[in-house]
Image (tube, rainbow over all chains, first blue to last red; front, side):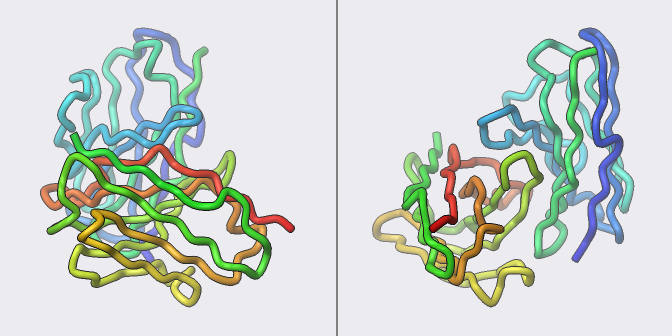
Length: 107
Length: 118
């Protein structure tokens, strides 16, 4: 299985901050990397697919980059509704595997 | 707008079989992969497996010996069976669509909580 390692596991930030979350794959996955936001009691919501493509309806303050094994999710200026848990997912092969999550909290 | 809705018993006894169905509305189940994903309370996400509209499947090796998925295109729904359950199978279970253009899960159900307890 491909192991996905996210960092940090948790992060405290303020409204307006720029935030970066990283995800590293245990082997190359080309650009088959997706980012999700999950709020308590809700299903995950797709933000970024294919490493850098913004899903329809997602605000442009979210962006993704990377290829191969190293990827980043950047939120350019945090809004109050962005405080949530973020997961990466590799869709290069099965079994699909998720990162362990990054909990973004209000400072 | 595609919508997914999970249904099934919320309580399953240890050693018995967990059975869930995902109903797809607002779009056809044909020509897509459909996945099951679970999440224990306070923990991360685990992919259980997927089924194509033709019936072909891929399962997570960690669960493969206990999982069976099926699809009913006439009803626009697909199903999950997980046998010999234990307390470790207690989780929120989600169904999701595997988008062909991105290979990401683009539509998700709201999830259904399954508790394994006697």
